[in-house]
Length: 224
Image 1 (cartoon, one colour):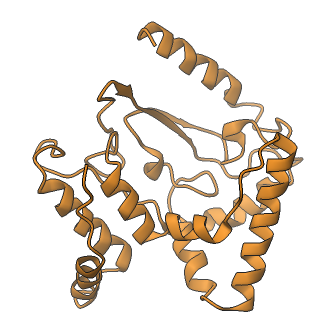
Image 2: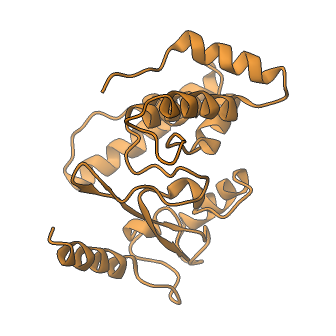
């Protein structure tokens, strides 16, 4: 599939919508929606497959301008932390905090969704197509940043959650987590979803391990 994204057209869309009081994220999302909607191979019920997943990256990008000391320090800290996790897990893949920031902001997310639209919902906070080209897409999300007072990672996630203004897991909003068939939301934060840190979580919510076991059983029933 050839990408229809053009930087010049994207900038023009941002400038045009800015005159109408519309922000960059929504302007770029409208631009990519029209790109997808203009391709009959991608249209579902007359619309493109799009979603908006940019709040945290845009906030960091706006508060950490290029060339600033704060940006250098934060990116260095992210790279060091990621490298430490890699060492502990036996993964030596190079880390790039700056690359992550650029790929998760409004422009980066728009490019990714335009290039890989499979499973992305047609409507905000809705379901996407579950089966595309032999691949099944499922998703679930967390909506509780603070889940265990003994988990030190819960506190920064709780602070970060204020950025979203909607139900979220501390880093990603529940709606932006929808892909394919959405299986629901749980009292988990972004790290609880992969059973970190040290398995400390909300004791009154389903275990993340159980969710993965259930998903494995679901896939087995589908013959996968």
